[in-house]
Length: 66
Image 1 (cartoon, rainbow, N blue to C red):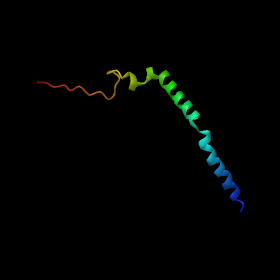
Image 2: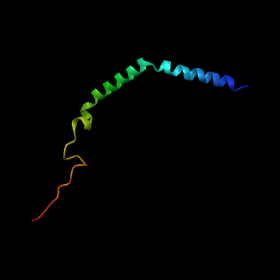
Image 3: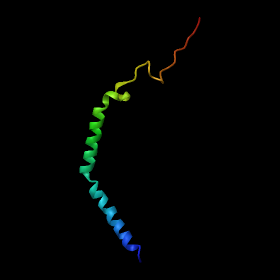
């Protein structure tokens, strides 16, 4: 059966993946994301807010004549 060796090799790869993506890699990814967020916080409108002049979602003013 020629495909069985390929399946066995793929099983080994699948078993190795969790070992390679262990806590060290996750911790490094989290640290990188935190650093990126801190470096770009001043440009983030969620953190800094949007000025009322440039906010496209601000409520429209209604003119009413009495």
